[in-house]
Amino acid sequence: MGGSNMTILETFSLKNKVALVTGGAGNYGRQIVQAVAEAGARTYVASRNLEALERLAAEHRGLGHDVRALRMDQTDEPSIFAVRDTIVRESGKLHILVNNAVARPVKRGYFDDAAAIDESLRVNGTGLILVTRALGEVMADGGSIVNIGSTMGLVGVEPSNYRGTDMNGWYPDYFFHKGGMGNLTRFLASYYGPRGIRCNCVHPGGLRAESQPEAFVKNYSERTCLGRLAYDTDLMGIIVFLVSDASVYVTGTNIPVDGGYTAK
Image (cartoon, rainbow, N blue to C red; front, side, top):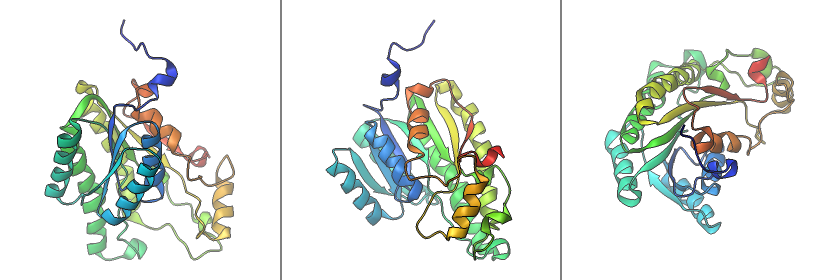
């Protein structure tokens, strides 16, 4: 009847797996890299900021993790192909792809100029597709793709979150490409399914940061079921689950990790 002979804990191990995390030096990226590397995968991290990635990789190597930094601009196909070819040359196959990279060129909200919006969609929309199709061609059968979305791709702006602050949530490009990512996930699940490659999307809620005004922290926390923003380790469990054999029959899903923000 098929199935696995591994114990349940063994199914969560990423030993002998090869992973690529894009945009690995940011707030979400750092915990994703930590999760995948701690679980045993050889982990490549790639973005335009090679200097930051080299520091991150060095930190992990000091802990005994196999983490390697590569420069990649996801709007530039030769750059993507170079990363793909390096992984194949050094590791043979790719088992895990986590699409985490994001650019935020829109600074003035809804009425920012067209060039800023175009740049956002080029990096976050077109770039996502370019990376996934290039790396998908060298993924091992039975591999896993995880896209990092946002609750902003699931629900609209909640103005009360920003009451008493200078912040606002009126960034249409972000809602547009994170919402589109959710349905692209279903497309990719269908496309790669015959090879046993799964694709799922994680939609994190707000992440606690020291720079956030207390009014925002209070407003947002009250909007969640758990009464807080996310900690810097809250994505690790869901990532390891989705990229490991523990979720071997899970594909095409959009999973909020938001403390119940979207449950209300």
